[in-house]
Image 1 (cartoon, helix red, strand yellow):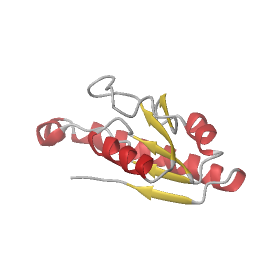
Image 2 (cartoon, rainbow, N blue to C red):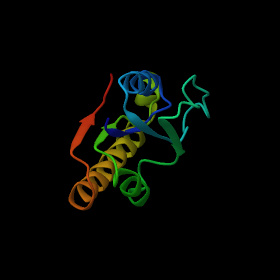
Image 3 (tube, rainbow, N blue to C red):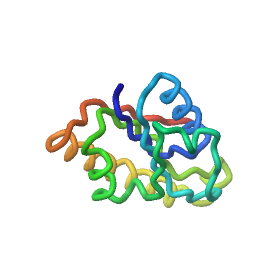
Image 4 (spheres, rainbow, N blue to C red):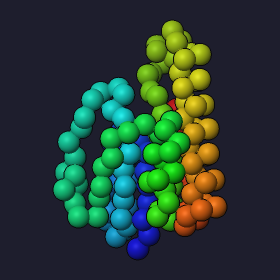
Length: 126
């Protein structure tokens, strides 16, 4: 099966995506920096087809290295905050999420050209 890198793997949506990918037989590399709630323990943490890397999706070198032998990137990392946080810190929230997306795209382009990355999926929620 394919090898998938999922950014934001320890988040609410990311956790469900990891479970589904593992149930379908994929090898999954999860990336998360635990910026909001800290480390989360999941039932699949010791699954033989799952590897969790603590790091930041804004780190282009880290992302590129992780993606070099992946077939698929699922970009789910984002700075979250809820509606009250958005109204208080809209610029910071948007600027950070734009940096995450730009870094993710830069790494994906490098990994596609130099590695085996073939597919990118972007996740988003309201």
